[in-house]
Image (tube, rainbow, N blue to C red; front, side, top):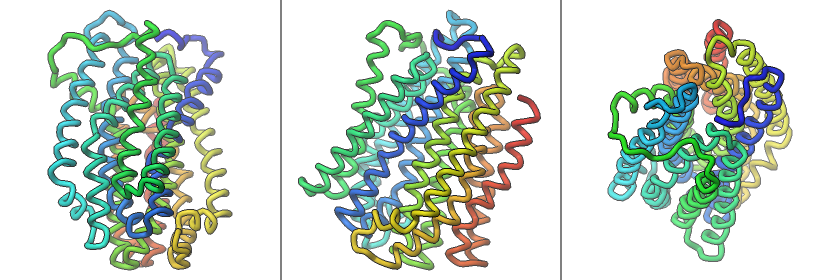
Length: 438
């Protein structure tokens, strides 16, 4: 690590440098799917939009797996930086690479051989199955690109090059947007074209990130070492909160899709698709804050870094709350025009469901930001058990029963309410963990 110093008076500049780069990068990265949402909605129609939303959990699982490996490996890389010539520091990138290969084999096989079965399992019906299976086939088959990109993004950032990491994410996203337009409109390639555009973006990102090696400043590289189950478990333990953060979005989407299908059919699912994809971009800002503080917290993880960690924690929470307030105000005020952007057929029911849902659903931003930041802070402080508890509660344990209970009591409104209620409950525990030990 060459760019992080131990001078406490430089904490704010470092925080701004790392967090701003990662927030901008994550916004760009999250626009992969948002661009698909816009062009599919405008260029194909509401059934295709509903199909995209049904396929999103598979993307969340794949992306979350890449983040688990990348964030976990990069955290161990930073935590072991005190001994740069030690075996752990020298081999952790290679061990992470082995994990990416294993995960890529699983996802690619699923995309090549079982796209229809996965689409059906995720809730696709006769109208949405062709669209969903086409999208999943391409997306999962190109999983090595997404996983490899996540791995490089995390390690390049932790190796003192957050701006390069940001550039890779943003340029990759812009490439996706341009190709989305070309493949969906002039070439008329439909869902397959949208998926190919999304799969091309990480290639561009990795080409940019590869310049980190050509400059000769990279502190990590592939080495001759055998796969180690112990190292793999350590990497996964440190990164599992990132996986669950991503996976929780997928789990919520699956549960909500089934509940909404029973109440509002494909139109309701398409409306929720608008909310879910906007939420992916908004939550990406919190993920960017979390990823930005990760190398800093890991660097100051020992007792001598207590003052620095307290400052980082304060800055992260304030930034999260300021963004949450701004985002909620904008989505509440402009909910109708935002919904109309994704409504090619000008269906008033679609707009009404999406617009009214935004005003309730996005209250969760005030709590989810703190929860995501807490998970990253705890993992970066080598406290994986507490990070796992926060992540698992918001991702699985509370949201699923809350969604069923509130949907039974309050119908569609109850589904929207379940998200802020769950995030608020988890936030209480997250704050206890966060302030109990800096």
